[in-house]
Length: 124
Image 1 (cartoon, rainbow, N blue to C red):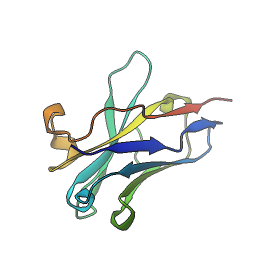
Image 2: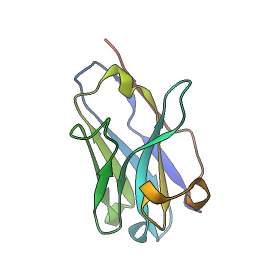
Image 3: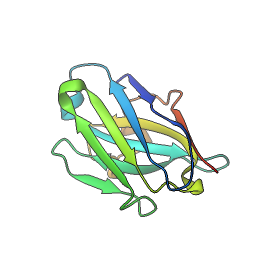
Image 4: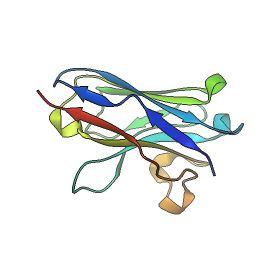
């Protein structure tokens, strides 16, 4: 298990930007694949961005070109830079980890528990 704490959400106007952070506990951060998920009201949780231990990134089509995932292994922190935000990006954002790439990981292979997440609201 990995303890994860998300932060950085807020209210932003369409077209605006936000940077989310995910602080991870433990000394194994650098050997884990990490990712950002989001869940909008009435919808299933979806993976929007992931980064492997080697730095390879993948994005959902809905955020490609607008979101950038990055990691700082020295700080045990994962980031999600979001730009050109749209109302449909409104959701609670969560981070999680696995020992395999997130886009192929099943729920049972995720190492973090779903905590509070951080709310992102895109509205004028």
